[in-house]
Length: 163
Image 1 (tube, rainbow, N blue to C red):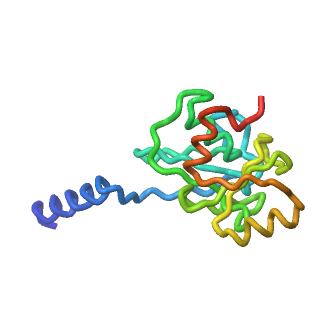
Image 2 (image 1 turned 180 degrees about the horizontal axis):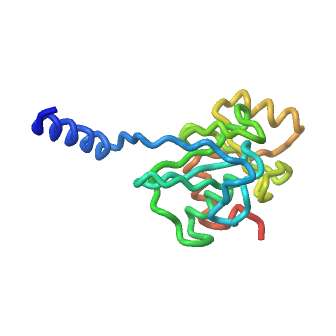
């Protein structure tokens, strides 16, 4: 390949990454191996997991959505630089495998009776019908439905992870 063509391709690739188009993808979860940077526990259930990817492509696995939110809100150790954020879609995930989606595409439920690894009671769904089935199956009342922005906002006032 001639030098000019190579430099053109390189600059186009750099331009795409600067425009916010990312090539990073969530990395597969290794249950029982990956460790949460917020609480230092190993990830034990993929249905509640979350992931942060830095702009340089480093992956951080969280054992619960509430750990990610609290970490982003500065309630624990210093937060890594944020590139992309993902959370597991409960309906499509299993205890051994997280089906990650961007947090902006998810609907979050909070209820104190939802049992999560850290006890914060947060779970994510990509479809409203799946969230409604989850609520009905567990006979939950007064479930709080939150967007990602609302989840962060509420978490800024008080940590989601119980003390």
